[in-house]
Figure (cartoon, rainbow, N blue to C red):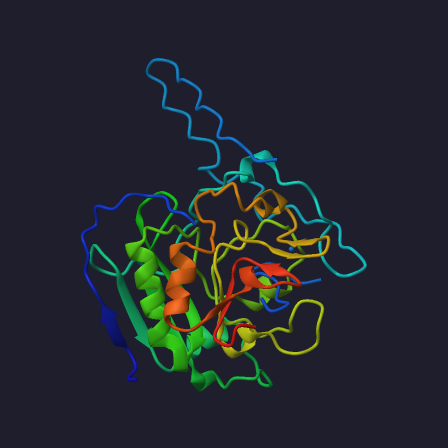
Length: 291
């Protein structure tokens, strides 16, 4: 694969928002390690001449990512109920990279990833994958606002083409994502706030509660919308405020279902889903080896 290789496909921009819709003992990407059915309330009627109030759950609260949770002896944040504003979470955070040109799906793969991208990632000497074995993938995705957005992933170069196909499929299915970024050291090592929701791939870290490397440390795993698709093992929920989304029967935008487009897209390239595991559930997690 050559640097700057462009993989692109143009589609009509008129698409509807919303969708139906986890890490082999992995915590959600972007969530610091040691993370009754709700209804949509009616939007209040605005006074004549006043701007309409935003629908509940469409605007991020100002405290998002800022309220640090007390840390448990296990090193995770204290488990707390899901705040009302996050029970039907469907806002979109700012893009981390400039918009790719065009009006439909587009992806740009740079292999190997530029040094400037590696430098702001969690890669360091000793990680189980070499820096020149990682690709920088920029691609477009649907936000919860229904608009076209651009995100970035750092992935193993052996699977970059396959993952472009996956996100092309998700674009076609109108599956929404909140944000797609490359995980930084600061984000990986931050104190827990329990409300992270960044879709991401490479993260040089160990498995949750373990000492062996996570599949994310090889660039061979992806977490999608971790808040809508939390990790569950016993009483531990990660992100720590996402317990509302353990009700998988209450299918809300951004959630992954066994018969939905996300599982189908990853199955198409032979990747396994953590939501189908028996001893724990990792609804956000997909990996090349199924772990």
